[in-house]
Length: 305
Ligand code: NAD
Image 1 (cartoon, rainbow, N blue to C red):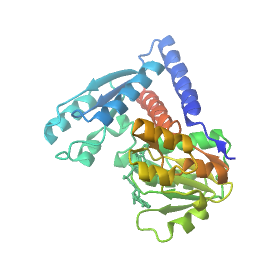
Image 2: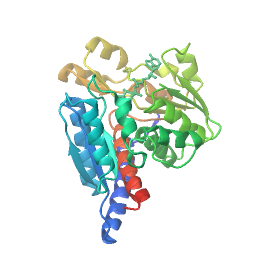
Image 3: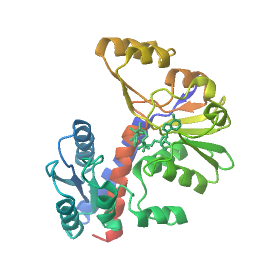
């Protein structure tokens, strides 16, 4: 049976670390860090994510401000809103919740955020710093995954690491961070030939594709460390019957409640083969929010505010 990599527990430790640092700032008479969250429109999933981020701010003592422009905001008005937060000395970090409504250009908006306040680490300048191995604000999901792997003592040096997915938010930065730890890194994606064979070579497998239960137990190298970034809502019972064979409890829940959350990896099967696995939910999701709090604290301290 694989070891469970408890992302939730490690995320709580990270939040506590941030809370202590914020408390120390307050004792020194300094203002707490401030995160500005921009939520365009009423997308229900985005509202849930923003709620989680604002709650984490409250837990750590970070101040949060929300800006909720309507879904029909123009690109130029969104740009103006971002500029106003850039020039607000009371704001340390800016987060524009994705996805944006279709008429808006997400990249153009993200590139407007001052690199010093870019707590998501998506600005090209921060991406460039990561590329060059320089310090800077780094994307929350991969950086928090790396922290957790290190906390569990996972030795990455010389190991074969496979990152499934090549997004700018997770896949690409994760690959760079693994490379920085001297892993031998492969990136696989939707055009990769023989994905099961490529997966079977991996000592460390990071799945970030958004396909429920795509990675089967038979694809996993015995003893591998598996990090499942995917968060998928499954509502289709026949699909559940295929992917939850080794997780009867989840299948039962799907039948009862009509939907369940799962990752890109078949968790029950992975637990029988791998050396260590993150669950979904309770794995990488909470780590991402904790990473955001760390980045907000870092942005504040870097600004000398
Ligand atoms: P994305 O859609 O931007 O990228 C998906 C990637 O997967 C692409 O590079 C694509 O080439 C690859 N892919 C798609 N189908 C594939 C297939 N059949 N075989 C191999 N590769 C395939 O997604 P993203 O933003 O990187 O997110 C990926 C998943 O991670 C989603 O489920 C998302 O919800 C989740 N996510 C979770 C967190 C978290 O905090 N846990 C954070 C970000 C994203």
